[in-house]
Figure 1 (cartoon, rainbow over the protein chains, first blue to last red):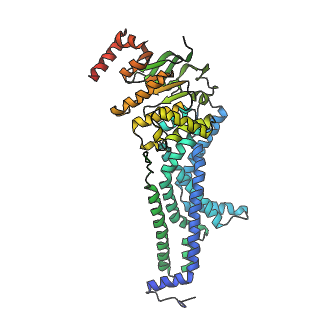
Figure 2 (figure 1 turned 90 degrees about the vertical axis):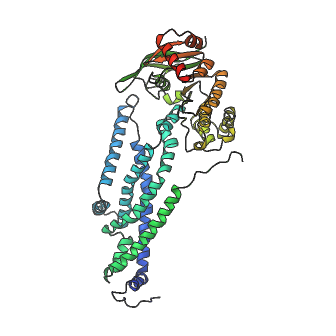
Figure 3 (figure 1 turned 180 degrees about the horizontal axis):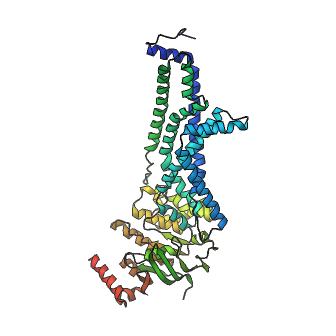
Length: 249
Length: 248
């Protein structure tokens, strides 16, 4: 049911907002959905990939016990991680998006479209940031934890998986939550390759009627709601009290 | 003479340009309790940490159950399963509760069944007086409680030898006793133990042999009576005098 048949005059700010919501509601809804999709997939995918980077980076080279081929592989993979993190954190995501989208487009892959390119870029970008978050999480774990694991007979890798990672990842969860919040906002740049996220949706909704201020005011409110709710959830997780076990029970 | 289970042959260890161990030779016999004393910086903790290669010496041999830990081809992780270690800072796994700390290694390394591991852990936790804490996250325990759990955790692997690295140095004074009691019981049961400690009375009471270290060398070794009543070396006397003086 269309309430507004014509656009309100220029000085009617709130009526214009209502008009835009009424007329382009489906645009905004689709945009929110795509923005959420990019942020959720980007953060989850980034988290999983960052674990692989962390495993590669945390390998110790044992000059006495490793064969030269093991040493070479370890050095190569550690070097790869260093370069990866430097490149993805040292260049703007908007530039990465252009290179990936237009770089892979000529291969004429049937599945390659702006959304797939956007998901790829936000995931690869987030991987680099979360890898750094987990690295500092690992540095924060007392090295006695690994020594205790080794003294029981666990290998370095087992000690990592069973003792260090669980603690480091748990300590990193708030920072990973923050990466999600950053992604909610920063995926706006992916509109540059034509991803129909909230930013692009707002552009589309205001391009023919020249009411960008009202349109992006709506976008700002939606972004704010998304980030506010998420940060409340992250805060809640961060301040969760450890459960106290009553031994007299 | 009981069987020698750990033989240290001429090990050297340096940190950067400082020589911390300068050619150590030491035999540990089965069921023997050996305490290592000496001032800080004498190399006693480094020596203990070399015994299971948490610190790796530059050269020498460490023979345990007939295998040389220094040999790159030897299965170090497997040998470490038979050497329990107790740390000054406890190093319990902070993301787990008391029971989980005890059963993780035997289940995943010794392939023990979970129910069997739990039964065994309950016995050992009872022995160290921590059974009623089995479900408590370790971060909620006091230092003395943590150290007793750490001892139980090490015992879960059926070690042939237990290494103690200043196990009471990080404890409040009122908690030292409870940990030393557990260690005394262990010694009485015939566990082979190497203990780095500042607790002279405890060392005197529980040890078969005392090793006095100074400047990266074993300066003197002998029975508790030899060392505490008739020390031969001048630096041993000086150390014990200094120690007695501080304790007055």
